[in-house]
View (tube, rainbow over the protein chains, first blue to last red):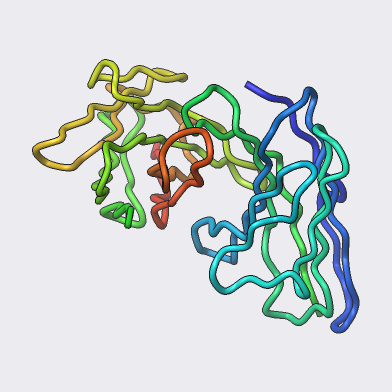
Length: 114
Length: 115
């Protein structure tokens, strides 16, 4: 498995501001993923983050809104920019480990935008 | 494209009763299938996974799931529910296969356990 931590665990932010979420893994991984879980909904993949290359975004998500950094093999950040109440969600990072798409998730960051 | 359908957004069972959570998938390639559990205010925890080995997969906390290709199903079961099983359960299929896949999640089933 993997030990994954996220910071902050929760935050309440004002409309128009930005929040950067950090994800730290206990050992090196090639691929990290960022998901969004809107209230009462399932998880949706935002982007895949590989170290040393640009993140790959899924349809409906753009880099200007959700810039991602991946400076090394154990760390990544996701920024939610110019926030609106519609961005209120749980944001989760995950890592692939086990060779067959098995993903392990962090505890999530619960974001509320007022 | 891959997809997952979970039948029943909410399932309620009595403590000690059988738990059955339904999941059907659609995949154009041999799928990898997963069940995750999410306890209130927590992240997702992997319960079990199917990766084309044995069709009956045993996971943590007494859960198991059976892969049935003919029915395109991967239902989750537990013989006897415990109060601590109350949580939301997500079925997922690997989106692209291999080590670069992403996960396609179902909408989730919230399990309630009555004393």
